Image (cartoon, rainbow, N blue to C red; front, side, top):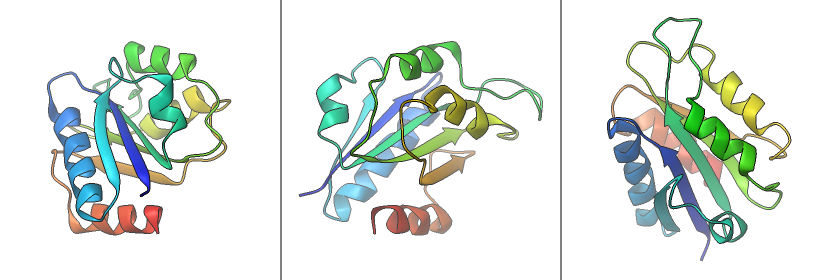
Length: 139
């Protein structure tokens, strides 16, 4: 059975709920999927994953100033090189994501080979476009 770990950092719970919804959907599709906060994530969670989704809330109030928060950037900095898992990013936001994915990719640039998925949500709900992107990601 393929394994998906969805690792998140949430400020008010929206990103946590989005990660849990992603894990639930992937579980329905037959994957062994779990959502873990960055505080719960351990090396074995990274090593055992076929799919790794990394997410955080969008910090910054302006369209051009969004960035991953300090805790998520520190987490990314401490990650080992992830070479076996297919990697995706996700974020939740209030107004816009701006340069959020650029900032996340920059923090991960020496840690992953490529980023194969980018999901963004204003709520914690998965819409049909999110589901289609996830299906393509694991396909």
